[in-house]
Image 1 (spheres, one colour):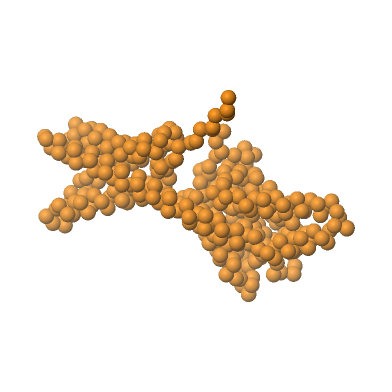
Image 2 (tube, rainbow, N blue to C red; image 1 turned 180 degrees about the vertical axis):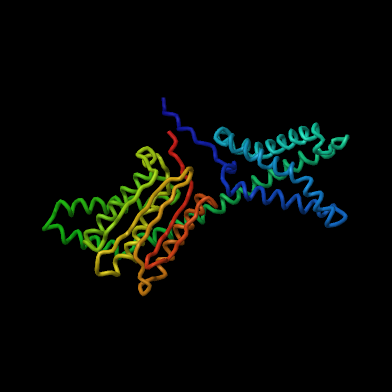
Length: 345
């Protein structure tokens, strides 16, 4: 019998309602929509403000409760066909709103018209907003796909500098006769580095794998720069289990280290220290890289590399990730904060 084709996972069109970015955009859209509707019907500005304040309690609780239910049910709903996921974004907000209106009515917190008009209006409004927001987030995801590919190309251009490859190969050639084994190990590190460079920008890797790649990169640069390159590592609240399971974007740390070496160590003639701090605080990971700052050697390439990393973080984590840079007391620091995501399985 011919082998059956592997089952194809259904497309995911359900917004990630666990994401802070989705929550903020949803609350902002719902509140603005209701506010405009209230202003359109109210006889005066004062009456509109009072009406909106009265509706705010139901509005916020219904929105947050719907997001919470969709967040909790996300893994299950993503197993179904896209039309089921879209339908859930309509029915869940409508059902949550109906239950809340009924509950508040028993407490005399919300006036329900005897004909059920307020109930009907609330349910239909929640369903319509759920449909529109799901459609918006689905279109937004599709629209960002080309941007993600473009970010990958820009990141590759920033990472694969021709002079880095040229200098690395020259360093290997200088070792072939004097230290053939070291030359072979360096070539293997270089091959591994460029193999990883060809990964999709959306791929995730473990923190341990990313650090191993960084060590391979630094070993290549050490051959070229010698004692001028000094690196100090500091890990905080990072157990071996966290190192092996924490998921971060592939090639997130290595380009930042390359940036630090290129702008902080290469221009100097004496030993320069690059400090790398990694830590976990609750559900957040933080990475800080500090290198000497040479104002006379700063270039646009530095900002280009950082902008590429910032764009990747924004595309992958939305508003939950930050990249900030500071220059103080002759040192340049780049600091990243993003969610701690644990590898499943």
